[in-house]
Every structure is written in structure tokens, then in C-alpha cells.
Image (cartoon, rainbow, N blue to C red; front, top):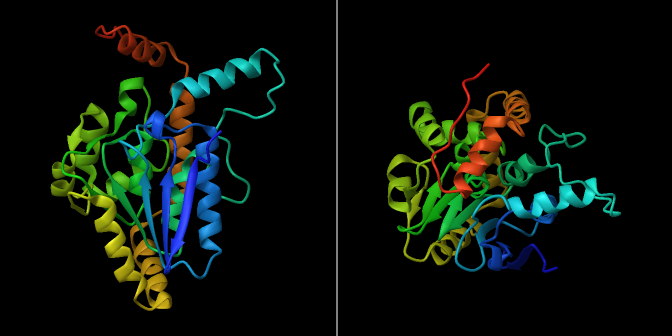
Amino acid sequence: MTERVTVQVDEGVADVRLNRPDKLNALDLPTFEALAATGDALAADPSVRAVVLSGEGRAFCAGLDFAAFAAMAERGSSGSGTSGSSDITGREPGRITNLGQQAVHTWRELPQPVIAAVHGHALGGGLQIAMGADLRIVAPDTKLSVLEIRWGLVPDMTGTAALIRLVGEDVAKELTFTGRTITGEEAARIGLATRTAADPHTAATELAREIAGNSPDAVRAAKRLLNRAADHDLAGQFLEESRALGALRGTPNQAEAVRAYFEKRPPAFADPA
């Protein structure tokens, strides 16, 4: 198994990369665990002044690896000896997040500024990871989507809180209700991205080096103050995300959403009870 997240630190800038390029950096359980652990490690490293978060290969992150989670669940139910759990929704001890949410929230609570360099695709959970960063520099042709509605689900990795904060309530609802795909150019226009760049990683690294040249105490204090001004009752918001997902997961309409997509036909949903 390859290392799911790689980290290289140079002159105070941590270059953090999702590292499943053959899967378009799709999210499996080891990736969630690696993201959360990487955030913890960087938070404890005073030499790190800024972070660039990106994905190896052709995409930033294509979202959840459904096949990996399904295979883990099947192994667990067959009693094959797999001791790990494929469930990422259990609340983390001492945290307001579950593991899936912490893989995103870790970048917001990190004391150092985090810049996401986004290219290719940022879909579903991948977009939520990008939204966890303080800034997002995206390629103009990047494809971004709040994709969860396709599967009959809701954003459950802190995405509902982040979307409102970034684009406002009405645009957040439009993107979430429709799941439509937007480009990096539109993302920048509506505030989902900070700006576009032909080479997002180079642009993000240059900006990170500029930030790293400032007082780390002042930069950390500024991030703390700005986050505090924007956040309201995150614990309640994240708990509601988990409850909503739990109520949807495995229901007939959620299963129908997945089947219809893979069978390439219009879904036939039942009316809500």
C-alpha cells in the first residue's frame, strides 16, 4: 500500500499531497486516517509556517472511494478477520468531529495557514477537503461539484458549514440541491475559490512562501481571530450532518440513486413517508 498522504517541508512550507493518483486520489479509510494524522503532526511542528495541500496525478480528489468501503464492509460481514472498521462517522474522542469530518476540519483548526492547490477534479468529499483550507487556488478548467445529492446523500464532512461561509446561503443551496459541476473560473467568481492560476501548485507555493516570511505569531493569531469570527456552533452543525447522513444511508431512495446512476437511467424515487 502506498503512503496515502506525503509531506515534505522546505523553508517553513509543508507540501502535503494526497497520494492515490491511480484512483484520482479517491478517499478510502487509510486516506481519511492519514489526513487527520498529518494535520495533527503539522500542528505540533513549530517550524512549519504555511501548508500547501494538493493531489498527485490528474486530480485533486475525485471524492469517496465507494468500492473500497464496500469491500471493507463485505470483508467485515463475512468474518474474514478484518479488525478495522469501514465506518468513518463515529465521533472522535475529545473532538467535535468524526473521522471523515476531521480529515477536513484539521486544516481549518491547524494554526498555520493552509492553501489548497486544486486541479483536475474536486468532487464531493474532495471538494469538502479543499473547502477546509484557508485559501483555494484552482486551475480554470478544474471540475468542482457538491456531488453528494447524486447518491441520495448530503455533504457530511463539514461541507454544509463551509459552503455557507464561502458562497452564501442561496448559492450553497443551489449547488447542494442540484450537484451541478462548475469550473474553476466559476468557482472563483462565486467565492468558492480564492483565485485561478494556470499552475495552482506553483502559485500556492509562492503564496505560502510569502506568508511564511511574515511573523508566525501574527499569522497564527490572525487565522485564529478570523476563524473565530466566522464559526458559529460548529459542534452542533457537524452533529447534524452526521445525523442527516445516518438517516439517509441505506434507505430505498439512497440505494435507488446509486443504482440508477450506474445503470444509466433516470431514477424512480419513492415519495417520502
